[in-house]
Structure formats: C-alpha cells, structure tokens
Image (cartoon, rainbow, N blue to C red; front, side, top):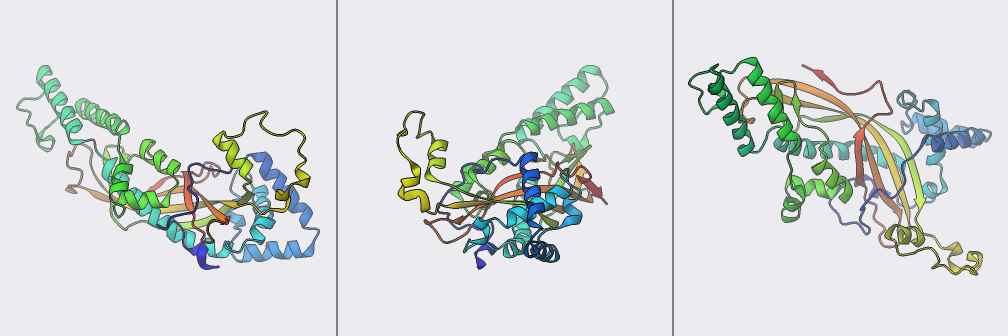
Length: 356
C-alpha cells in the first residue's frame, strides 16, 4: 500500500497521460453526489465513516466550506471517496496520498518556479538590447537626454521613457517562446527534464506555451530565491474514479465510427460483461505556496544582479489535478501525474498576496 507515496516520480508509467481522461466536474455532478451522501447518512456506518474521515484531515470542512459549492462540496467528497472503485483498489489509499502530495507539490513548485524565474523575468538578450537602442534613439531625437550610453544602468531617462521601456519589455516577455521539451529529452536531469517527468504531456506543453505566471511586479523583476518555497494548507477538493473500457479509448482515438457496431449484438451475453477494466482516478488538491523573491529594478538588463534588490515573500493559491491508474493489468505500480495546475477560482476569498 506504499505505492501512493511515490507521487510525481520519474518512473515510466504503463500508460501515458496525453490528456485529462476524466471530463471536468460541473455543478450538477457535485449536487448529485452531495444528495447521494445525504441519503447514505441514514446508515450509521456511513455517518461514522464521515466523522472518521474528517478527524483524519482527509476531508477539511473549514476549507471546503469556503468554496463556491459550500457544504455540497464536503458531502460530494465524502460520497466520491466511498466509491467501490476506490474501496476495492489494491493500490490506492487516500491517507497515503495525502501524506505524500504536499512534498510532491513542493518539488513541483521548486522546479517550475526556477524555470519561470530564469525564463520569464527577462527578454532574450537581443530583444532587451533592441528596447535600449529604441529608447536611446527616441531620447536623442527629442533632445531630452544627451550622452546616452549603451548600459541601461548608466542612463537617466524621464518617467515616460521608463514606462515605455518597461511596457515594451513586458510585452516581449509575454510573447517570448521557450522550448523546454527539447532540453528535457536531451537532459533528463535538467530542470526541464525533471518537470517533464512530473506532468502529463498536455500539462507540460501548456506550461511552456501558456505561461502560468510572469514574474514581473510593478516595476520590479521577481527573481526566485532557490529552495525558499513552502507548500502549505493542502486540502483535498475532489476524488473521482472511472472505469475505462476499451470502447472509451477507441472513441477517443476515433477508431469506432457510427454504423461499425453490430446492431443485433446483445452485450449482456458478452464475455466482457464481468470483465474488470482499468480504473483511472482523479484527485483535485487545493494548496498554497509561499515563495521568496528578490525584487530588482525592471530596467536592469542583467536580472541576476541583485544590487538594489529587496526580498519579498509571495503567497499564491492553486489547485493541482492528479491522475493515476489505480487498477491496470499492465502495471501494479501506481504513479500519479499532474495533469492540470490552475488558480483556485472556486475560492473567491483566496488569492495572491505579498508580505515583506
């Protein structure tokens, strides 16, 4: 039962997560599960199980109660955790999952934030120099500054020029393209390689193309201080398990089209009626992460130069969505992959804040 502790490791999985296989949950699903939980409370065993799960911290009512779904989210989680697909799994244990998920998320945040700080706090060297050259030529044309030098640190520009240069650089960073995958495939031990092993292919591609965040705050670059991050306040939001039949995979691959099936076949006489198919689980986890950054002037081309910088701690709240095969004939090992990492929008009272 210890396999659930190995979260986001570097082992090879029997099945690759190319995309999120379980459809996103909608409000009607939550209310349906909540209603089923209410009905189950007529049974004393179900009530005792709910209290035990709360006491162990697996269900956290004070946190879940702040979500848009409110108390329904608490009841829905109780109902879904008691799915027969979870209870009859030989590889899944929710307590072990919760024991390991905080450390896994901390490793993930450390790797990703180092990459974000390296790649998304400054433009490429050529792009940054173009901004300096454009600002210099504008200054000379307007006669505002004389003797503008090549180094930004030695220039004195008025407020309008500073704002224009910062805006141009910010836009350049937003449009900046990175190719983490090539590096990851060539060097598995690199930051890019470590990140690739933690994520599904879709999540990895999303993070390198649609940046999770760009570390610019006002007129400062936020350069991450390595190993300063700490994941806190981990709470389980939802747990779902789905049995994936070959038909499900074939439909996703487009291998079955309308009219291919035999209309006279009665599936109740099929040998597959009692067959156990692979089961995939999806776990949504709310967490906050506090990270310390060195704030340096935006117009300092060498963002690694900490002169004049000040340390700031930024706390942000995210939801990590994990998927793993909890029953798969191809492998008895359970490895989780992060398939989505999104802001905690269902918690309107939580968000990004700074501390000095």
